[in-house]
Length: 334
Image (cartoon, rainbow, N blue to C red; front, side, top):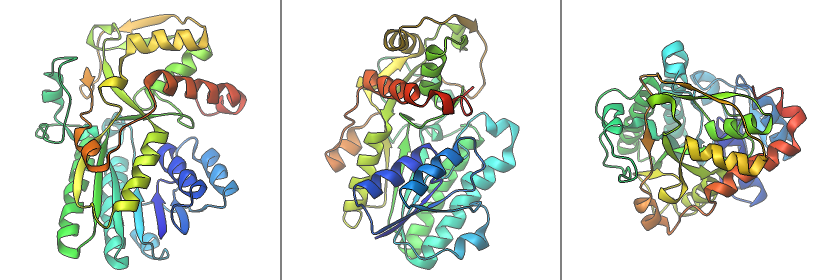
C-alpha cells in the first residue's frame, strides 16, 4: 500500500510517517508539506533520515497535487491548525483547510484512493459548548454543530461534507476523525495550539505566563491524547479500512485524561521542579471555550481501542524530549 500524508512535516503528520515507516505499515510512505510553518524544517530532516520523501507543494496548488504519483491511501493532516488565525488571515485558513481538502478529493477520485481525514473538535457549536456543565458532560458525535464555530471549524466541518459527497459520488472509502487536543514530543506549542507543550516549556525555562479568560483562574478543562495513541489508532484504521469505513468518530483522551489549566500547572511543577509566576487576564477570544472532554465510546466499540498514555505520562514524555533537545528547540518555541 502506497500512502501519502499531507501536512507530513507537521506535528501529527511527521509522527505518523515515522511510525508507519518503523512499523512497516505500507510499502511506500511519502509526505506533502510546503514547509512554511515554524518547525517543519526540523521535522523534514527527521523524515529525511528515515528516507521518507517530502514533496514541497502547497496543498492549494491543485495542478502540482494532481501531478504526484498515485497512492492507495491519503491521510489528510494538512491544516492551518490555529483557531485564532481564522481572524487574522481568512484566506490562508480557507485555502489550506477547505480548498486543500477539495484538491485532495479530486486526487483521490483520479487515483481511486481511500482517505483518512483529520478533522477537529472545533466543528461543534461554540455557544452550546459554553453552556455545558463541567465534569458532567462528554461530547459525542451527535453534539450540536449548528451556529458559529470559527472559520477554522467551519472549514473542517465543510470539508467533512465535501468528503461525504465525493464518497457517495465516486465510491471513495473514507474515515473522518474529529480529534480533540493531541500532544506529545515534537510539538512546538503555542498559546492557542499545543498548549500542553507550551505549558511544559514555560515551566522548564521558568518563564511567566497567563491564565487567559473565564476569570483568569485556569479553570478551563480539556482532555489530551498522546500522539502515540493517535498513531496506533490510525494504523488500526488502515488495517481495517476495507471492512470499516465511511463514518465519523470523535477521538480524544477521554474523561481519564481531562485536566484543567490549574491542575496542568501543578503537574508541570511536579515534573520540572520549577514554579513559575502566573498572571491573569479575565477576557478571552470569542472562540475560546471553557470545557471539552471527548466521548470515546464509538471509537472504542468499533476498534476495541482506547488511549493508553495517561496525562501525567504525556506531560513527562514532553518534558524529557524538551530536556534532551533544549538547545535546538529554543529556535522554535517562544
